[in-house]
Length: 319
Image (tube, rainbow, N blue to C red):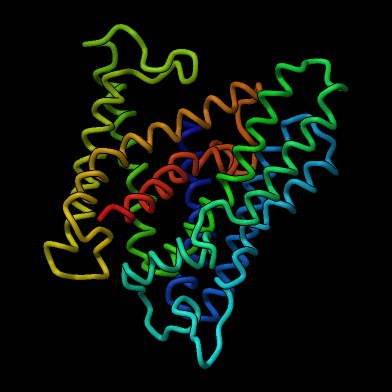
């Protein structure tokens, strides 16, 4: 009971800090988005450092990796460029919400691809080179080379995925706060349903655990119930805008997107949880940090959200 109270108190404090920034980013128009950008960059750096600090590199090397990861926020520079002759649909709009077409352009063309129209832009080459360089520089000096190789693979994964996740989340937040609500609540519903499903029905049908080496407490019954409840919730939140013809409540505009989201997003929620649990087991840690008492670090809390956010955004590309 004491742990539940602590976790509840920590969650309230965390969201009391986050929600004002989320609201400011959405309702504050240009100035709010600028403040939100700064907040999400700080969030990105903190969350990333929580993960990579366990790789046994010197602090200075991890700080270089951390600083280099910000190249994902800096490039493509056209994301930030605007002029009277060529206004930026993301920064210069006087509307609170962006249309889905403008959201797609902002994320894929301006936010990541740039003018080259290809995913492998300069930021990804630079970040890849820095990760590889540090691996070879420090490999010989490591006593446990197997652990170091795994830790550096995790470091490379984290330096890409965490800034990308939070840059996309920032754009979604600024574009439509309903979209932010969706990518946050979908994992909560899936995880909560899985918890209670496992608690009351665990091992009633399947004696084998769901992921015994990664997360021993998870059961197949819990995973199935979590998936079904998550899928139902995804259908409701993704279809309600189309049903009511309200574009502010609309994430997907065609049935292919909605069906794909219903099938995949609850799975991605569970996969995100398992991936970061596997990372912690590989790094031989319980939590990434003690920032949030009872919960751990930022990526302990937002592991599933990261995969759902990226997955939900990729589904937008389906015609």
